[in-house]
Image (cartoon, rainbow, N blue to C red):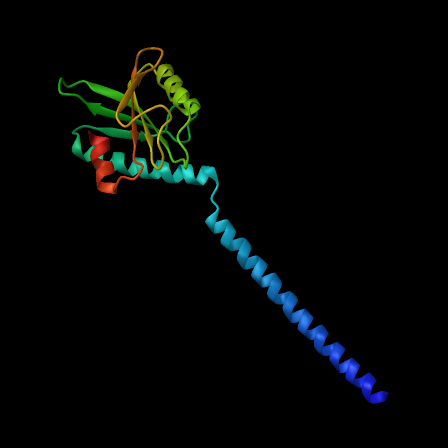
Amino acid sequence: RIAMAEGREAMTTMVSEGNAIMKEKIVALEAQLAQQIASNTKSSSAIGKQGETIVLDLLENTVCKLFPFASVKDMTGVPHSADFHLWIMVPNGQKIKILIDSKKYKRAVNSDEINKLYEDMDRDEECQCGIMISIDSGICTKRQFCFSRTLKQKPVLFLTFQDLAPETQKDVLCW
């Protein structure tokens, strides 16, 4: 009986130690899983910032270099002003102001976002036209190079970079 009691005690100690080790491993794996989920799941704001960065890079390093006297201003933090303001000189020497809105959605850009751009454009008296650029999806009811007009009759161009190579994105934006 003494030997059996000592055996049970030794077995209980081993099981308790094994249990403690397993708990530590579970805690470590849960922490690793949480970190992996956090790195794979980005907020819509972070995804939007990625899209804005792509478009700003294209504007600064492609459009502004290709068109003399062009300039761009990042307005991403300013409400009711679109993401970017682009000034381009047209052949008669006049500078025009273009409001540009960028979207990086998994699904088609909805009509509410289109209407926001229309409102931003009509609010800005200097704005003469606008461009909506969708990085990864289509734009609802709009085809590539589709034009529309705001209530004040300012033209808006709709572009999608969905399934386009980076070099082609540059060409599409400059066209």
